[in-house]
Length: 196
Image (cartoon, rainbow, N blue to C red):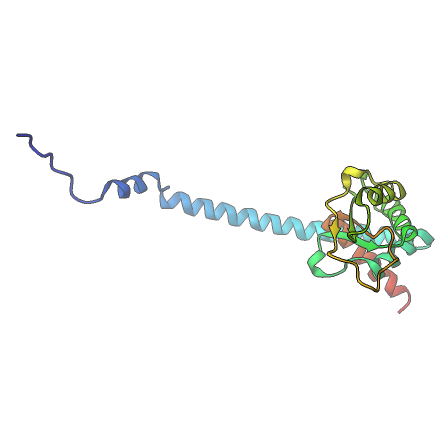
């Protein structure tokens, strides 16, 4: 007859394993303190960085405020660009007018010193339009490489209002950057203050 080995009383195997792998409470407090310190440092940096960006925007506005292309770009964005809080981390302008978008891209390249690889484009098309041909059209016109176009939006159908219109759909040009969005906000504010 085999004797049964008595099991130790107290915690079961899974409870003992949890205790083994649980970091000591003091370590968890240290980690929480370090995270809090890092978050405070990040917040301080962001505030200082935002102030610096706004100061640079003020200086550049003074430098370029008499340049017609500069003023045209600000007005275009103010009138046609995305200015809602939901889009606070990018500059985005959507339009169907090829010349308007061409001018806007010239503005971006000249005054915001955008690296070519950061400019993105997206097409909004109707089912009866040839996506590849239209993408090529906008790419050549705006000098944005095809690999910088993101997936196009294709509408379900064309309404009677848009029949025989918008042969190239609409194109959205955007740059993901909270800093550039802040600069644009300062420029718009300064421009508006000139005439109020």
